Structures are given as structure tokens and as C-alpha cells.
Image (cartoon, rainbow, N blue to C red; front, side):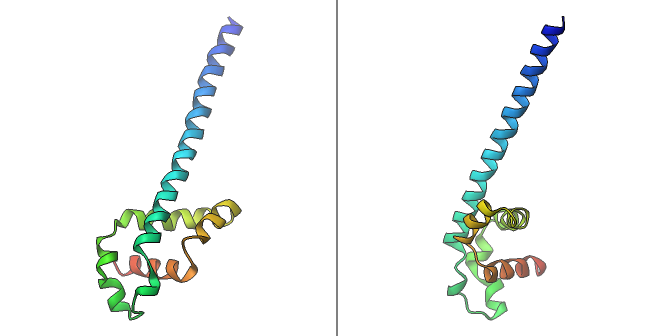
Length: 107
């Protein structure tokens, strides 16, 4: 009976561990997708730094707001993690993050 319980617990724990790992793995690739969207759609250099133009800009208006929100959340969560930090630094700089956060405050 005890062996049987151990086997069942191992199966349950193994499945839980596997699901947890896959979830983390999926999050990473979702995060990568978000950053790729940023790379294409959010070139701050092309904007006139007049804030009115920034908020009216059609590239931002048509962009999926959830992508922007999630990327900010991910950036804040993984800021101290060197792997994520190096990954983010390829796509975003602090000025871009500042303007995106301003965009959400005015929304």
C-alpha cells in the first residue's frame, strides 16, 4: 500500500513539475514575441518628441495594448535577472520604457 501511494505521489508531482516547466518555457517565448513586436512597431527615434504626436501616432494606436502592458510587467519582474536583462537590452532602452509608461498613464 505504501509503495502504491509513493508511485501515485511521484506521478502527480512529476506531472506538476512538468507543467510548471512548460508554463515557464511558454512564458519565455511569449515574452520574446512581445519584444519582437516592440522591435518592429516601436522605434522611438522616428517619433517627434512632441508628446501630442507621440500619443496620436497610428503605430501606437494600432498596436495591441496587451503586448505593451505585458512587456512592461515582464521588464519590471525580470529587471534583476541578468539573462532577461540582457535579452531586453537588445530591444528596449530606458527612454522607450519611459514613453510607454507615459502612454499608459494618459490612456
